[in-house]
Image (cartoon, rainbow, N blue to C red; front, side, top):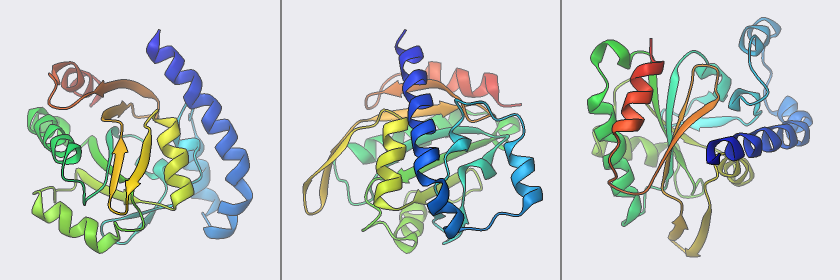
Length: 206
């Protein structure tokens, strides 16, 4: 029941965000017609690949989520200056990564999305990835505008609030999306048993 409610919320958020941001994003990026047709094929209404936001990676490259179509996505929202929950979430992500068979890893992307894009520049995200030994092709760090980040958090049912100049309170949720960008599983909490999450990733990755 909980997952069905989340999917309904995801659909509603995607429809609203897509319509609100369509004109703005068309001005920000020009996507070739052939690429657009390729990425929009077989994307359901529930897919996060309908979202128009443009993100910047730790390598300072621009990317749309739909460019990741075809991979299983394991996603968490953090901020690099966090000293409490985020290190545990990062450790959980690394633990999940170690349990994915090598033969499956090429079909899996592990994404860390910053909730503090003002502080988390591409350079800072790159440094963070190196410090945490998250440098392989499977790892992707993303930052966006404040509004896109807030909107995307709503899609994931992640709540966050700035409580001091450098600190946020936030949900501790790891989400798994299938190859079409649909939410299929969420793990909530810190240091929890991630067997169900890992099993779902392995089941999907092929």
